[in-house]
Length: 164
Image 1 (cartoon, rainbow, N blue to C red):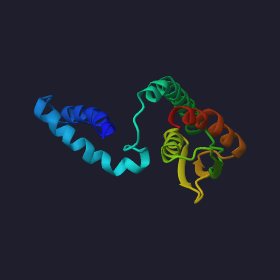
Image 2: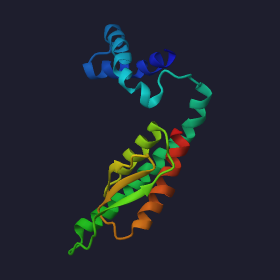
Image 3: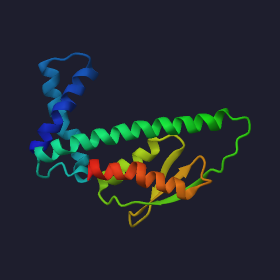
């Protein structure tokens, strides 16, 4: 229940900003809506579990590092996609690559899948039944081992640190 209230505060503030006026009535209404909005996501993020502020504080630098790496990877991918688009003759080999993952929790799998999808030129399209392989569509899959290595070393490593 503590987590519901902890997560409802930012949702209530967001409700106030979306509504257009920051008043106590809007904030209270947002606090009432917060747990209702969080309820469907309880199994994914274990919202009902034990709240550890120490654990949350320890993860802040790791999450900041993850977001910095994510921004760098998005910029690199944007440059790569821009080169492909601008080049006079497009020499790409799009394809689907199976990428084995070490992430096992729902939150970690969601984070790595969304991270891959946010990076231009790649799109997570499916996950295996045993949740150990992501299927990723790449705009240029001419080097599948390079793509796998990039995802494992440049993205998944930081997702594991930040979210598991």
